[in-house]
Image (tube, rainbow, N blue to C red; front, side, top):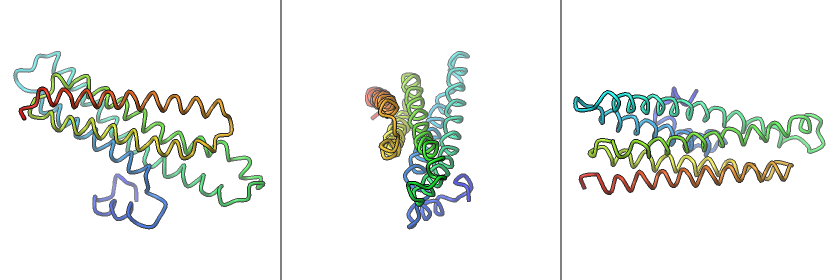
Length: 206
């Protein structure tokens, strides 16, 4: 059953079961989608009768963007599971097997592509939340801060699935390029999440 069609209880049972999928990749994506949903709620409550037309447009644009990110995250959870299955099947073949040799490089790239896309999406989400934090309803800033924390968690979690497969990339230059991109995204996401929390501590009615 697709992740989107499962109840919370059935999803937790599936993650906790002694099966390879859903695993960390799916959890990273789901955490990111939860963060996006919480961000949408925070911004939705920030639109009120005192909002200017520009503020309404900006908030709605951010809400629409977060909706797209949340849906993307769920799609990536499925892609990650499929990519893992392909790579796992090749792992079971002998190293000199013609099928393994022919499909190996592409399967490794696929196993890295999905979690890297999670990192990218989480980075974009955190940046968006940082942009709107100053205008968010003060009473919803704790929720916005949690959304930012979840975006950082999704990025850091996705990074583990990138790194665990990185040694399988044969090209040293390709490995270096991926690692550099990963480090840049993680630094940016952490910085944006920290900014949202800083704004929340300053503006929220604690």
